[in-house]
Length: 160
Image 1 (spheres, rainbow, N blue to C red):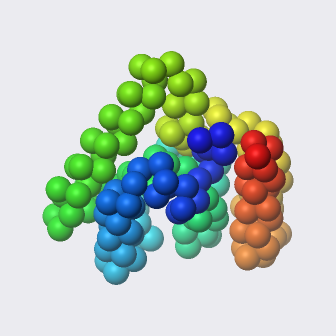
Image 2 (cartoon, one colour):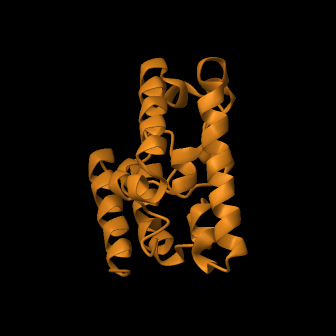
Image 3 (cartoon, rainbow, N blue to C red):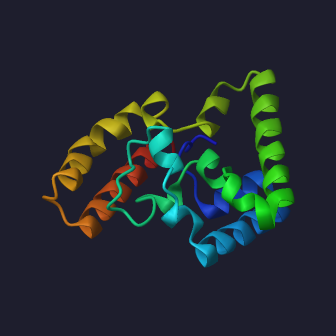
């Protein structure tokens, strides 16, 4: 948990268990198959003011390190075919956060992000120029993704 808000698939599986990770994998496959998130006009990332959001990116630039809440949030578009799974994942997420908070675990807030500035201001500061370059079309998207991931890994390494 020290490396939150950025978390890998393996860390998610360790944290939530094989069964939940399996459900998340199925939901991700469903999303890719139906292209729900990519084609969504509301774009949850925009609504929560994620500093990494830009319409030019086909997916989150730190997809393999995205925060827990990003991995466990599935909007109404998933309800038709996956409603029960989405509800269970949501219930588990909130139960975990509430249990951590009631136990006095201060880092429980790291489950609930973005905006990332609340829990990783150093990271946000480091990627600000990269994101400005993306928005100004002065940096190749692949290079931007690589640079953002380098910064995310640097941030995570602070907690090793």
